[in-house]
Length: 395
Image 1 (cartoon, rainbow, N blue to C red):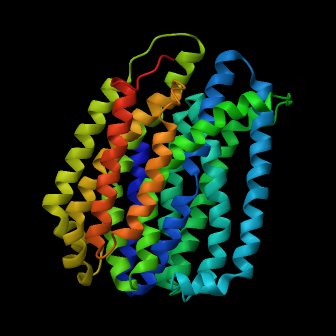
Image 2: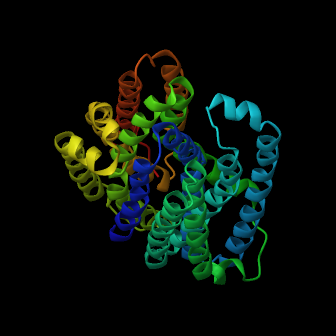
């Protein structure tokens, strides 16, 4: 938790640089950040975490080695095709998202690749329960991001592209630190594994955590496409502060997941979810209350004076909208770690409904946040039903 919060603090500190640029340039950075967050990083991480914890519990390290190598190569191939398409159609893309700096778009492409690779190796570290190196990687990511971005923005006056360069540098440093301690697994001799059996485990995890990540990130890209640059910048600032609470509560579910997978693989009993859920509720609600009460001061401290009034008006709505999402994250981790996959159709349907809701209710930024809050509450209700209600299943 200390490492995650520390890394999150440095990543959040990047947004102080908004004071050195106009809101339109900051909103361009915001959309690149949202696109990077939209990459299915969480599903990739949780799939590798589950497979690593299971392989280590059952002594199947050589199968795991083959899986890591295949995932590494496969994600590169998958990234390469859309990267070429982005370069070919960069004109329409820049027009749609109101991007004026093409260098930022080009730099975003390796950012997307590293954003895909980093959670893979975080998943391996998480499955190993090697939180020491995982934590150092998170901290290095934040420090590298803010240091490189500050140099690019303040010294070289590269604004959106400079901020994206900071993201790229931080990811590169973090990736090296994450890959090195896992080398004994992916460098060992590989052994073939049963693809059909693997897909029966991977696809549900991808759908479940992908639906959660969609609710976490889609609103920012939608706002960028529907509102002008200034309004988008105010929305990005409020969203950045509200989602910062996820840095505080996320480690609880991160630590819980591999323990439950390991216990289930060895047919051992464990009951961590109640304690983790209570801790998440206290921390998430406390963070939302703090942003509600101290919002104007925090916005004034982090952003330019023009942000204070509009961002402070959005912040209470946004802060409380993500609280049910944080709680639902705990229950999703518990259910999927126990292979309770019956909730997946409901999660996918909710993600589709959220996309429809955003397209229908976007007259104002507050309307977008209300749509987010309603869907997050529905997500929590669905997860609670399948955890304790009539949707509960036996592992």
